[in-house]
Image (cartoon, rainbow, N blue to C red):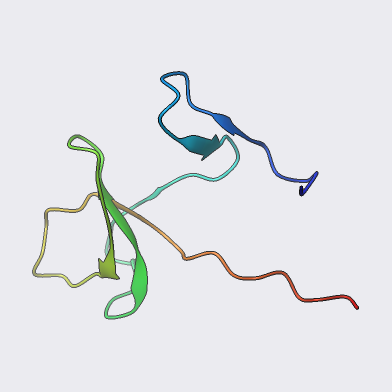
Length: 72
């Protein structure tokens, strides 16, 4: 278990959430044509895909996690 993560089960018990990791609002600076997590805040629909400026369904994005470098 990683001690530096602030995750817990959501109040409805349906998900594990991290209180320190937040969605980023989609704006003109949002990366395009690269894999990321996308969500529509109001519908709660999560998607792994690429953002492009023609699709306005998604409202927020987040980068994909990476593996911690092995220190061994």
